[in-house]
Length: 231
Image (tube, rainbow, N blue to C red; front, side, top):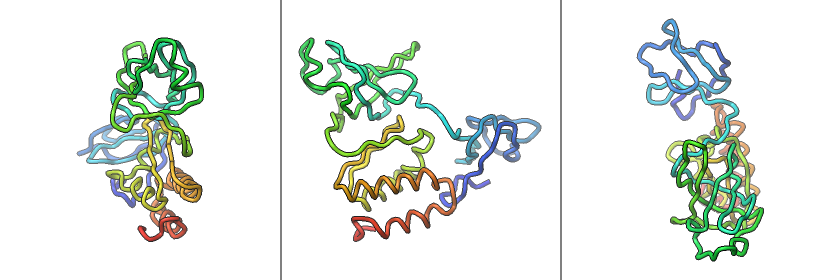
């Protein structure tokens, strides 16, 4: 199995399916070793990286971790904090003390209202699954323009590529700013033509990123890129 290579096509496996021999391999998430074989425990894509075999589930929910960059939407506003939809099982809490503005008590709605979108980071997650967000940091801010997409969180690596190579390629070709949140929210900002091209490219990466035809498909799409001179 060579799923660690960029041009290898990932293999869809089901629970109980033998992925390959366990000799000389480490077992990652979504798999177990049994009778010298690696057995899948989830429905997903078998992947090998640095000698570790794992299964990336087809569908998975966002699990917040401290330090995650997220694209969050205001779901509710209180006098001293915002409840943010972070595309997970629990909402994130953004207290006014961690907002980028000086907020007076009771004036939270003057800065962000329901439906507003922001770039934030997960400050902490406690044992009760309370997620505290912060907007104090470089690049963290309210988003007032651009387009927002939602992708499955298990497709994030496909969009980014190794060392963010695919993401940089999409940015250059579309002449857009593209930020991929760890919560499966993608913000694209540029002119209308660039945004439309980037949305299609992200769709191609979602649908074909695991196939060995991905390079050919994204290259064909690049021929219609708004910023053709840089591709």
